[in-house]
Image 1 (cartoon, rainbow, N blue to C red):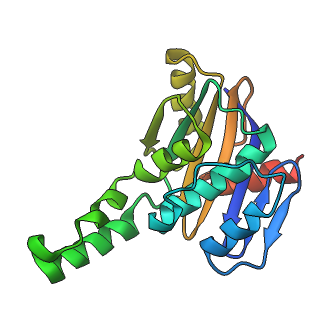
Image 2 (image 1 turned 120 degrees about the vertical axis):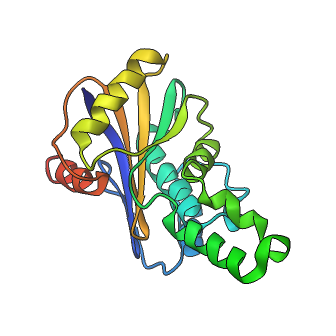
Length: 201
């Protein structure tokens, strides 16, 4: 089973870490949150070169991964990253389809297609942190128990010590860093698990 060793949560106008108790508030946009984060010396620097061009799900993934990295020092050796459930890219799919219907194949914005891939936010978060381990998106029933079963298989197959799991849902994101070892409570999503872990710290 796995053990949560670090984490972060972004919700509407607040962003917080799991164990260190750090919190940022008072932002209305993800660009404002990025600016606030760049002013904090406890948040590691990451590769955010493509931040402005990314969809909201990409931006949420990048910023949440950086916040979580503040709790493990940004050391990404032998670390994998997995996107799990959440909203996937449904909003981006709808935007791409509307643009295609309105403008057709010739005039439609083909660049919108990139954000329709559920792996895009995870890959961008991996680039942001410099993660070189496995990167993939996993869709399961809403159960952390099922998620952990899948992750244990990854720990066994790959030469990794930790997995950063990222879930993007309803305008927010949650990232939890797991190590192979002990168990976590059964929840339907990472946000619920974050709240339980925070109360029990």
